[in-house]
Length: 216
Image (cartoon, rainbow, N blue to C red; front, side, top):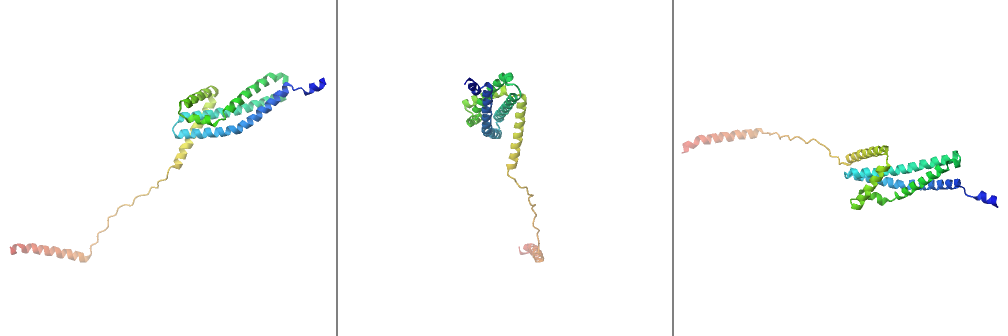
């Protein structure tokens, strides 16, 4: 009976393996959900750029980069822990594994909080509450993002600006440029009969002018 209980006893290693599996399953679910969030943040950044609000556009891109890095780093950490358990005696790395799993749970809890679309919309609002939230997010990102992440975000912002500028050029109405026709004066044609009439009128007028003193 004692031997049977020993065989059925759940060890710390069993718990660690189960916890790791649960975390990886959660991470896969969050990866699918977070893509909707990432797409919305990208669209929001573009919209803010069109309005000339570069500061908030940059905040949206920073938040997006932060979430991408959270997913990536958590996935890498779980993979490394699994590799550690499979290649090294569990008792030798037990402390490291449980610490890693604890950190993984914290990150997953934080990721779950990042899944609200309404929080993204608050990045573009001008209310006092929204501005306070934006400052809080900005401070959080400043303390958690590396210089490399920041450079990546700035490059992404420049690329978005270039894309939006190109789109504006493409959407501008095309105004055809045509050369206006030159004004050409109509040629004056005088028939021979008209010329004879003019000469006759001139002669009559001259004769009338000569005769007027005589009549007086």
